[in-house]
Structure formats: C-alpha cells, structure tokens
Length: 440
View 1 (tube, helix red, strand yellow):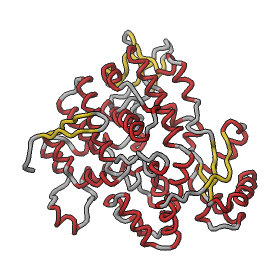
View 2 (spheres, one colour):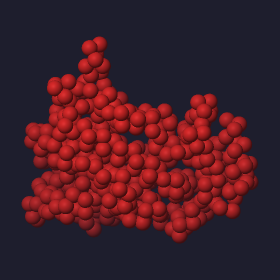
View 3 (cartoon, one colour):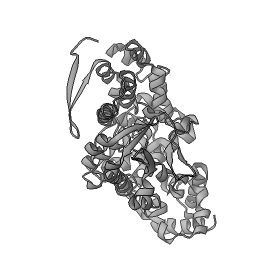
View 4 (cartoon, helix red, strand yellow):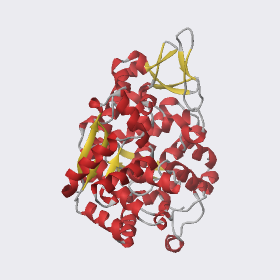
C-alpha cells in the first residue's frame, strides 16, 4: 500500500488515535470498512436516538485501549503486534445489527460471529463480492498481510475466539487450602479481549454511554490501565486499582439493565429477529458481506412477513409488552419451570402456542427470555471475578468488595420472561401467554 506511514484519527471518545504501519493497512481493508455500516447497538437508536455509532468506531477504540494496556504491561514487540491486530479485527465477524441476530443465526444457520471473524482473518471467507473486488482492487487476504509483517495470522485468530468457543479453560480461579487464590492460565493476550478487565469492554462501556447519553457507563480508564499488571502470566489489577475495578463492574451492570436489556430495545430486536426467521434460507448467504441497510433491503425484497416487520421498524411502530414474569415475584419453582424456554427451539415452540391460542399470526407474538447463563448468574460471575494483586497474593474482587459480590446476584433486568405483540392484540395475547406459561 502506498500512502502516509501513519494517520491521526480523531475519535469522539478517546481523542486523537495514531494508526501506523500494518495496522493502517488493516484499517483500509474491506473487512473493516464494512463495519462502518453496522451499528454497535443494533436497534437501540429507536430508544436512544444518539446510538448511531458503529462497529468500526468500536474496533478503532478497542485498538487504542489495547495499545494503552500493552504499554502498561510492557509487552514484547511480538505480543504487542498480535494484541493490537486482534483488537482491531475482533469484530469482523459481526453480522448486520451486531448482536441482535446472533441467536437466530446460531440456531438456524449454525453461524457464530467469533468463528466467522476468525475465518475472515485466516482468509477462509471474503467480505467482498466478486464484482466489488474489480472496483476496489483489493488483493490478497488479511492472513497474507499479517504474515508479511511478521504477525502470525493463526495466533491473531486464536485471540479473537474466546476461550469458551475452543474448549479452553482461559482464566481459572484456583483456591488453595491456605486461602491463597490465583488465576492459573498464561493466556494474557486472550484476556486482553475476553477477560474481566479487557480492552473490548472498557471501550464499549465508554462509547455506548457517550452515544446513548446514559451516564452509567463512565469508568476510570486511566486508573484501570495504570494499575494492571502481569502475574504468573495473567492480567491482574493491583490493589490500588480496586476502586476503579469496582466502578467498571458497576458501570457494566447498570449499562446492561438500562441500555442493552431495555424493554423497548429488546422488543425492536426481537421484531428484526422475527423478520429473519420468516425469511427463506437465502437470507443467510454472504452475511459477512452485508451491513445494516443492505440486509434490510434484502428482507424487504422477500415480501410478506419480513417486509411488514421491517416496515414497522422503519417507522417505529413497535410491538407492546402484553405479559411479563418479574424476577422479584418469581419463586425457585417458577424459575425452574421457566428455564426450559431459555433454549431457542423450546421458546419458539412456546411462542407459536401462545400465538395459536390468541388467534394471531405467529409473527405477531414475541416471547423473550434471557439466556440460561443470565438467569443462573454464570455470565455475571465471570465478569466480576477480577483478580486483585496485593503483596504478591491474588484474591478475586468479590472477596474484597461487597459491591462486586452483590453484583453477582443482581439481574440484568427486572423481568425473567416478556411477551409482546401489536397493541391491538395485547389483551388476548396476555390471556394466552398467562395460560401457556402456567402450563409449562
């Protein structure tokens, strides 16, 4: 590539971000440029009008924060190059509207955004169509570009895929008889993207709070970066960063409940999922080449239910909540009874039964339930177990901080199950949902 050796890019969250060398070349790749058209928060802009920021901005921000972490941890040039490449490329596999369609794509088409991103890095998939290739003249693959610059593409792809996707244990808490705890993996590069204190999380909390106007996402980035360290191959936070780590956990919990799992945001997202579910199988072809507008065009072109749902979303004619089961009102028996519908296919079958009993079209009933991990608290635990280093010994943050301990049992929203439908059907769908869920 010919051109300047570096560029200074003004970012709305981090200010001036310097990008140079191979990372500047990566920034110009079509795989990254596609992310200009993929909203970071999917359909959240229908509730928070400023939430129009993109995965491209977040990728650049994650690269910036990863750079700060590399400097603080004094990583070798080789580790630094891999970490920065992974940070910049970690969201390549996201389909249009980011996480919105993830569950549908995984269950119907066996598509996973991390695996898809790794395939793009390895050069096993292409983000551009043949006719686009001729117009923009992009040659070679990301893998070839990385290897030419001495960065192993397979290592970068391995960092992008989180430990759970490859049956790796990642960062594990070990409690010895003496009471000493430590985290025994040596996967600090992976932890920079998937750990309790990672570049991905620190950027998206700041960025999402900035664009939604919600103050809850404010974190002390400088303090966190300046108090991290490597201990037995793992990223830890020194004791003088404990308060900043608490702030990170609080910000994450509040952003989940106030933005990511906002009732109306969830309804809009489920309506888009319904449109994709109602479309034929061709809708999944080449999704790594699509952005938000192009997917909506394809759904409209399908006609029928997909076209209707997309039109409703376009003009913000959203379904209304008809029935909810609230977490504070649930008994242990209720939770056990409702757990099966956190599984996608069981939930879809229950959703269809509610629609049948209410006498409405299946596309007009949404049954939303959080994942099993969110109900049981497993997902929250992983992100609150920040390792705190003090006098050469490591303890999980939850042992040192009552706030973090409390966050493990805090739900991300006040409802366990929500049913929504067009406003004109609310009463009959409410009756059908109450009866159907009671019969589970």
